Image (tube, rainbow, N blue to C red; front, side, top):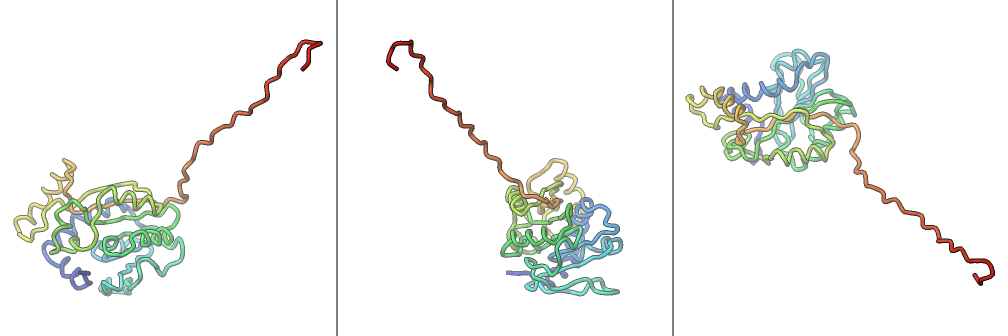
Length: 244
């Protein structure tokens, strides 16, 4: 079942969604750093995480897939959101400096096509912040949250996908160690769960967050060339007076 924009907006308005936004947003913006003077593109349902970016960046865009639907954002001023095919982005090459993907990669039919088009619209040296459900985490197994829908990924699967689409991971974090339970008690312990899980590098985090850089050249495998030895016919000295 595909989530639509109404489901996503309702989740982020709930107490569990508010805590999720705070925990995940801290990780995203830790990787993103300053975006002053940069052009930033969000793909999927990213508007909850674009507030601080929109204030500082030169330009902010948010493209949402047609199967999900779109909402106007921000609430005041000119809207920066639009419907788009995430594998055929309506942008020229090298149009943006940063791309943030949330609720996107796990929902498309061809993840490699999505990342290939992200590579196309990024400037040389541009960076991608990717948020994806962890295959071994509890959140991917509970469809009561948006992260329980679509295709979750293991770390090795993500690494292989990014390598095939010419992205080089520079930073990697796991987040959302707390269980996806709406109880107020569990929500109050979210910070403790994050400290505990991060400190011990536990494998059951809900999400992978990856900071990757666009590679400019495809690596080429170098094969060792076998050097052929030149073979010279041996010379035989024959004494004078004897037939050769």
